Every structure is written in structure tokens, then in C-alpha cells.
Amino acid sequence: MKTLIREKRIAKEITQEQLSQRLKVSRQTIISLEKGKYKPSLVLAHKLAQLFECTIEDLFIFEGDENLNE
Image (cartoon, rainbow, N blue to C red; front, side):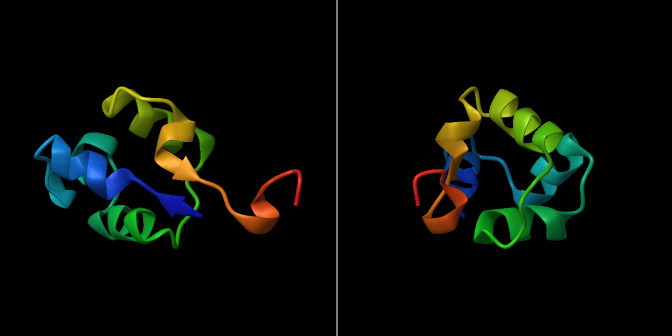
């Protein structure tokens, strides 16, 4: 799964540390999310979407077997 979290974070001029504090997660979680190595819970994905004022689908790009049609 690819994410646009890093791009959205940079556009809002928020550091990884600031984002982790706002979401009450570790900075390592933010790093893993940005690299697409961690699939967030629905609650965390929703919080990210709220923070970046977009939809969950705008943040996470599902590929391959993550989609219903493939």
C-alpha cells in the first residue's frame, strides 16, 4: 500500500514528531506509515484524513491483492 501521508505532512509544514504527538502515536509509527510498511487501524486512518482535510482514499493507494477486483 502506498500513502501520500508524507506529501500531505510536508505541505502542512508538520514534522514527523509533531504529527506523532497530535495523533498520540510514536514517531516510528509515522515513519512506517509514510513508507507504506504499516497498515493503520480505521480509527488512525480516519484521524489522519481529518487532520489533512481529505478522505481516507486520498491518503492510501491500494494496489494488487488489496483491491477487490484483483
